[in-house]
Image (cartoon, rainbow, N blue to C red; front, side):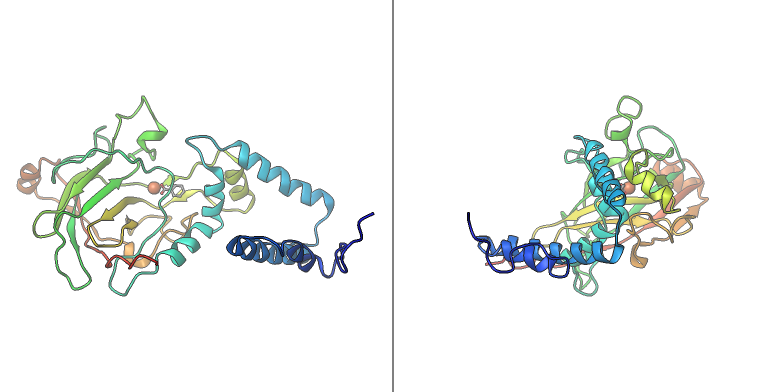
Amino acid sequence: MIAAEKGAYFDEARSAEIVIDRNADCPDARLAEIVAVVVRHLHAAVKEIDPTQEEWLQAIAFLTRTGHMCNDWRQEFILLSDVLGVSMLVDAIANRKPSGATQSTVLGPFHVADAPLLPNGADICLDGKGEPLLVRGRVTDPDGRPIAGARLDVWQANDEGFYDVQQKGIQPDFNLRGVFETDAEGRYWFRAAKPKFYPIPDDGPVGQLLRRLGRHPYRPAHLHFIVTAEDREALTTHIFVPDDPYIGSDPVFGVKESLIADFVLRDDPARAADLSLRNPFWEVEYDFVLAPARAAAG
Ligand code: BEZ
Ligand code: FE
């Protein structure tokens, strides 16, 4: 019989310590640190919750349903992290920006890597639905110097609240997506549709959890951007429509005050004709400020 090391048997009071000690020979110091922190906080949470066996099994069943909901297009665990505020916390920690740089927010699940590169002025609204929108602005450094050749990868939901990838065969491919490049003065501009609020996918366990918590699934209207340029930190962000009914209760906590843009309704038939937009049209001007690239860790 192999003798147990002193203190190796389970004990309620010292439960986390016993598990952490068992990992003492882990050759990966970072893994050991992460597991120790998770075990410490998880055991503290279980002690505070004081669960019945039945409640613990319900938690396991919830996580099992969450896993079963995942496939190549649906990532229910990311959605869970989103609605618990963890995605935004990780984003805040990993993307601390110097003052003056545009703030980041969640990527979300609907970005596609191969959207077409389009000339400035192009219309990304291929289904013709919704109110016409002109989006324009500049990309600069924190001193206001224009960045030429910066790329803006943009995507948004259509007027019915769905991304093209959620409605393959219904919406045209690459509806409301495109990549634009800034001109010599750092300017970009394109035509789109005024975004509307839409529900995050809520037909799975995360949607059930939201309902049981008395929360709604509606993300306030926004356009997504990934802005990149040479020697600059990549920026993943949104701009939000200010008068949206859900602006103060985003289920994924993605709203930041500095990302709420000014959408102005223009009634200007001559300018609309010039821009090939229906009149009246909405206009939003938003400048993105990119931080310098961080020195590579060495
Ligand atoms: C989105 O804005 O596309 C999104 C973000 C988080 C969860 C679901 C959707
Ligand atoms: Fe979105």
